[in-house]
Length: 148
Image (cartoon, rainbow, N blue to C red; front, side, top):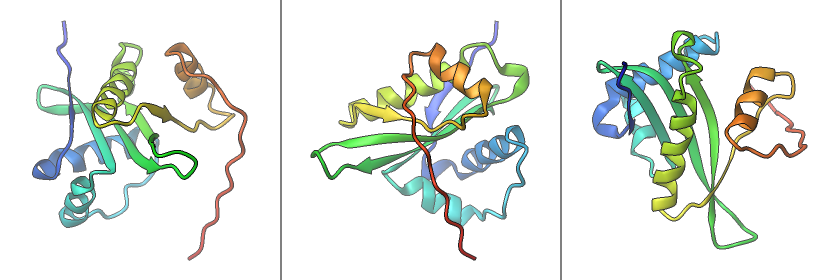
């Protein structure tokens, strides 16, 4: 039986952060842009940024990133789960669910009770996963503006 540990990645473990971000790029089949250790450390120092690693034998097998967003209509924060990735050979073992539960638990301990995650309408795998762990879909369109 495999043992997977789940932990928040902090600035004192930049190499783990870089490994998690590399894993995510690989799973998403996207190129990993140059990320210096200094940039990753700066990101991991932010209290409003969450990186959670699923680790087996000191190597990440999954990861999640999220941001705490202050709300204007209430005096509370909400957690935006931005990316979630699990190596294909580790999928369908409950690791994604545990990553979500871990970040939600840590965020709740910090006072953030509500979380949400965007999923593309054509990403059937993601939609099925989020429904299976109790997520409620809300119709929304997200507009992207890129300026170079």
